[in-house]
Length: 137
Image (cartoon, rainbow, N blue to C red; front, side, top):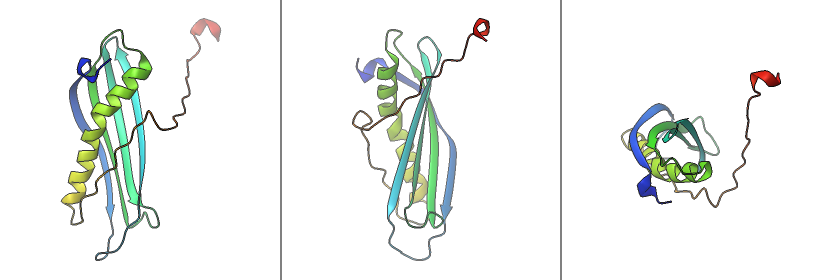
């Protein structure tokens, strides 16, 4: 399955939380956290949500930013969920990263460039939850 069969129909920044208590030009040791969720709304339609947090590892109260960005995707109906998850993340991540960079670059500090990640190389823990059917309760 190629990304070209998945279409990003819309994207938006859902929330941005930014703390900038930098005094002068100090040295930062940035740490990054990432999360992604894909919810299938109907056959062939899904909503992805990327959250990126960048903060000073030693003093997050000095500098911290979290950007949550979502996208609506049109998916082939025969795509499996894991492939949809991986491919939609690859499409939406650069938008979220660019939003974080843009906000920090106009905030009086050097713009933060978010390192790319390859989630196929990361340890991903999944919990599948299927609520019980009414006749099973």
